[in-house]
Image (cartoon, rainbow, N blue to C red; front, side):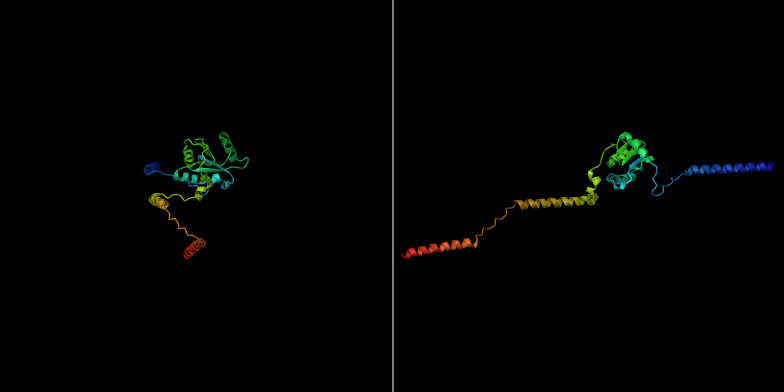
Length: 224
């Protein structure tokens, strides 16, 4: 019996030493738990919310904000959670109505920051949008230029290129434009040669007949 108790005590001491060594090893290396990734298409929880309509793709203001949301998520660790509203007596609709009652936006898209309790009504500029996401003071109404909403800027002149090649190309275009301007000035300053006046054939014939008549009169006077 005494031997059994001694054996159990030795076994307990051995297990305790193994547990202590394992704890020290984990403390040195650090135990990191990787966050569980969301499945594709599954929306993660966020303090930034976008309330959108059921047919958001047909809304030009929603389409104008899509590139800004993507840019924000690439530049910052923030994520914008999208909530579709439009169905009556739904939790999403009740939440939107409750939040919108304070600012009286009355339209979509509608952005709400749960931490700072700031809102943005409709489309806005990226500067204002990023300030709202960061919890900094942001304007409720700060619409972007009309070109960014309608897309007229993208259909117009091409965007200027940046970098060394872009600067070189723009400089060559300026030199070419300046040279063309100087050439046009020189051409405008040079006197244009006046075209020689040509008399019609009928006028020349009349002058010839008049000269012959005068010669005939002179000859007749000499004979008399």
